[in-house]
Image 1 (cartoon, rainbow, N blue to C red):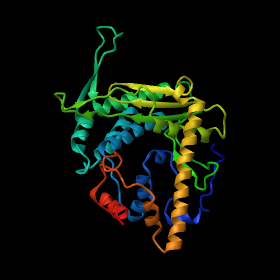
Image 2 (cartoon, rainbow, N blue to C red):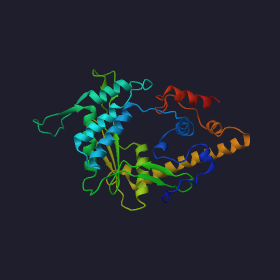
Image 3 (cartoon, rainbow, N blue to C red):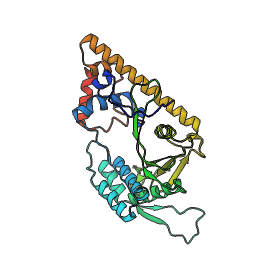
Image 4 (cartoon, rainbow, N blue to C red):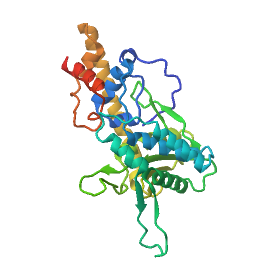
Length: 324
C-alpha cells in the first residue's frame, strides 16, 4: 500500500546515491531490470541517451495538443501548429528500424476514417493525415472523459513513499480534474502484406497492464486528498478513440488498481534489495558497485523491444558491463 507523500528526498540511503538510483517510477516497473538499472546507474551519468523513435515523439506531440487545448485553453489551430512543430523536430534514427518511413506515414499519409455502420448514407467520410486525425480523436476522447468537470489541469508531479521501501516513487500525471486522466496514442505499423505498406491496428479491447500500473500510482496519490478519485484511460489513433473508466471497467476497479500497486511495490522492493546486496559485496570485495549489481541481473535480451532499437554506443557500453 502507498503511504503518505514524501516531499524531502535528500535523505537517501548510501547505496542509492552510489548507484545513482534515487527514485522509482511507475513506468520503470514495466521495464526489464537490465534496462532500468543500466539506464539509471550507467547511461545517465555518462550522458548516453536512448533516443526515442518517431512514434514516441508523435505521442508526446498529441499529448501536448490535447493538454494545450483542454488545460491551457489554447486555440485548436495554435495547438496543432505547436504539435506539428514538435513532431518536425524529430531527427530520424538510423538505428531504429523503419523510423524514417514511420515518420512519413504519421506526418503525411492520408487516412480515411470508416463511416460508422449506423451513420446516414449521406454522411461524409472523415479523412486527414494520420497525425491530424490522432490529435483530433485524442481531443474528443479527453473531452468525453472530462465531461462535467469544472476544471481540468495539466498533471502535477506525484511523489509517494510505499511501505517497506526506502526510495520514493515519482511520476507526472497527464491531466487531472477530480481524478486521473491518462492519454495513450497508437500508431500504424509497417506491413508488407498491404499495398500502401502500413496498417492501422484496432484500439485495445482492454487496458495495457503497464498503463494500469501507472494510473494506479496516480490514483493512490490523489486519494490522499479525496476518497473519490475516478480514473480514465484514453486511447486514440487515426481510427478513433476509446475510454476505459474506473466507474465502469473492471480492469480499473479499486481491487485491480490495488493489485497493480502491490506488483509495483514487489518489483521495487526486489530492486532495492539487489542494490543493497551489490553495495555490500562491492565494499567487501573492493569492486565497483555497478559491477556487483549487474552480475546479479540477466544480460539484456537484444530482441526485447526496449533493447533492440537502442543506439550503438548505448548497446556497446551495456555489453562492457555484462561481459565484465
